[in-house]
Structure formats: structure tokens, C-alpha cells
Image 1 (cartoon, one colour):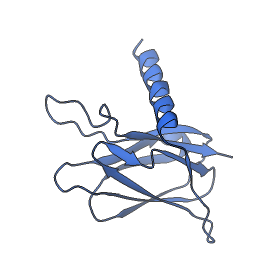
Image 2: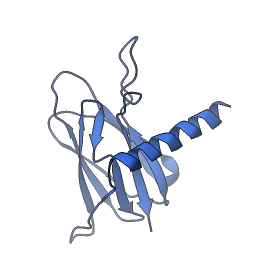
Image 3: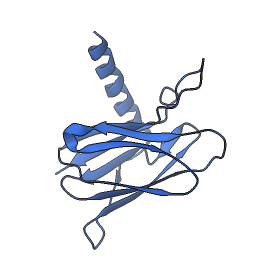
Length: 132
């Protein structure tokens, strides 16, 4: 039952992301690397829907623009060779990976203050879409 509910929540989140923001198709640089800058801020990521090609290296330049509230970015997709759990700071960090399986994978902030909703529950999530 929990799996079904989690699956439905993921589909609803994916639909919400698709409705709010057009997908950002990451261009391939001359060196064959797909590079994208991702900003984490007041309970959102920008862009929220990122499209990359399978079996091509990806570099995500991640950072946040606030000082006080801690944020991170998590992508847990070992089936696609993507495992990310990186704290965000004002200083940009490069996260590198090469996706190996087509699909849509959520990325999110897993921070949760005591007695409050998690950052993900407040909308700090997006979709990494891997295509042929």
C-alpha cells in the first residue's frame, strides 16, 4: 500500500512539475559533456525539469542563493548509475555522473526541520529525465 501511495505521489509531482515549467533540454558542449546550472532556493529548484541524454556525461553546477536555510540535492537512482546527495552552498559545486538508463528520476531536498514539513513536501523537488 505504501508503495502504491508513493508511486501516486511521484506521478502527481511529475505532473505538477510538467505543468509549471517547460523542460530544460541540456545542450551538449563541444567536449561531449552536458552541463546544467541548478539553483536551490526558497523551497524550489530551477530548473525543475531537466532533460539529458543517456550514456553521455552530465555535470550539474549546483548552488543556493540563501544564507540561513540549509538545502541539499538528492538523486537516488542507482539503476541509472546516479547517486547524488550533496549539500548546497552559495559556492557552486560540480556534480558529475553518466546516466545509463532511460527514465524519469526525481531530485529533491531532503531537509526537514523538527515539527515542520520537509522541504520536498513544500515543493523543493524536480525531475531529471534521461532520454535516448
